[in-house]
Amino acid sequence: MSFLRHLARSSIFMQSTKQSTLPTTFSWCHRRWMSTQSDVTQMSVRDALNVAMEEEFVRDERVFLLGEEVGQYNGAYKVSKGLLDKFGPKRVVDTPITEAGFAGLAVGAALSGLRPICEFMTFNFSMQAIDQVINSAAKIHYMSGGTVQCPIVFRGPNGFAAGVAAQHSQDYASWYGSIPGLKVVSPWNSEDAKGLLKASIRDPNPVVFLENELQYGITFPMSPESLSPDFVLPIDKAHILREGKDITIVSYSRTLNFCVEAAEKLESEDGVSVEVINMRSIRPLDLDAIINSVKKTSRLVTVETGFPHFGFGAEISALMMETEAFDYLDAPVERLTGADIPTPYAHNLEELSFPDTNLIVKVARRALYRKK
Image 1 (cartoon, one colour):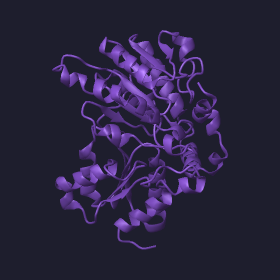
Image 2 (cartoon, helix red, strand yellow):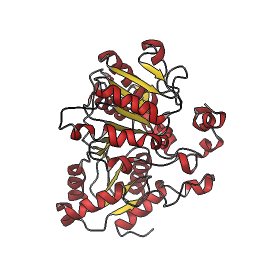
Image 3 (cartoon, helix red, strand yellow):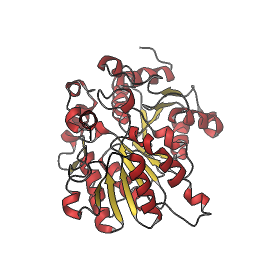
Image 4 (cartoon, helix red, strand yellow):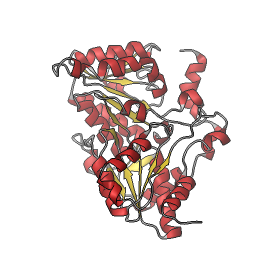
């Protein structure tokens, strides 16, 4: 691996000075949970993903992991730490820097009866392998008349991180979410990470599993049920993260940090009761969860870091027009997205390119016809 590419991808590079200026949501999360649930088992998102893979390795000998630096280096973000030592090089396979090559190898392995986990060091690099993901993995079940399955998980960090600029900051939820034959999931907390990854590995279909680099190190409480090796979460069901009655905010992955913080701020400053939905699954989309919430709150805000055109929020907005939810809306659906530009490298411009807590609060107030 070239020095510059290694540096751009490595976790050491991510320990930049920018981390000291990350939004306060992270410390807020820790304060909130650690102060009220100190007796509950805590686990980072990184460790939850690691545990999920280890448990599935033990459960099913057909499961294996391949990708760049997943073995001897323990993964670029240490998600696969220790797996090579426990399961050996036949099941934890370091590959050359050739996404198209090892993604094609993984698809072939899936078609031959194995259950590969194909790690992209970032989903930005999955563009090198998009033909394998879409034209091979996603379509083979249909093109074979339902006789051939492709049980494969494509996983890795998705979306913007910290100072990684235009080519390493894209959110691929809507890219892959538009493709028939794929399932697309995006976890937020540690229970999501473990339960959804285990479900994805067991699923007979190709699954695109979108993680987030800045979530890896955040610690969340784990319920006793989630610590079981049998714990899985359904891929097609959203989770009501916070119940409310005045307005609904829908999001996934890292931006839920800001959504929950915005909900707390709206409640404390305006007396507004906010329902926050963690979608978990992009495709299939749990439309019923959104409709049922809108029937209760009559207002909807969608939050994502993808581009505004043809995105997650655009699809949900259209669906609100096409379903019975439209009759319950008292205000137009509000979309919050990433800026319609290549992500800047400059820290001050990068911060202005994505939704944050204050912007979510501002837009929610607009949907509620409140000025402040």
